[in-house]
Length: 194
Image 1 (cartoon, one colour):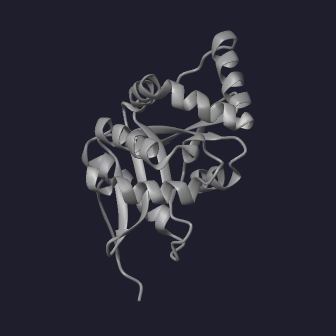
Image 2: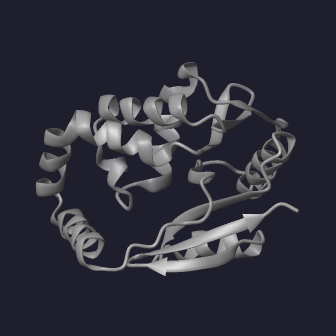
Image 3: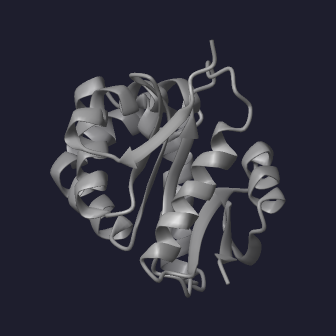
């Protein structure tokens, strides 16, 4: 039986289920997927509390996907890093691949030309549970997110994606995103909703 998908703003009550989706969707490709369950919940809680366009997609009581978006994603990250600096260093040293990536990021920021997106509204995370049996959940979640933005008179937003994440790049381009610029290992996209 295929239950209808429903959407609502993410709340503190959703954090545990969102963290399970996050771990399954990102596995070890995303640094935050390496966080302990407690640390990941703290990370997601901070992001959701400070970013007002965070949504979940549910079928029945099961969260099948989520979006974390807003205009305070950078602020959320800075607070989280400041609170968890030592834990993050331990994770980095246990996973040399990410340590090398972070060193490269710091060097690029320090010595390269720093580009910043023109769009303060950021789609920071979007994930659909890989165990979800409905293929269009990601598209429907994105459409609902954009509908919510338009209701709030927000007509442009941006996001960043790793250059090697071909599946995500294909998804964004199929859904009307345009490249804003490339920066190190990432591509910055934006989308106009008008």
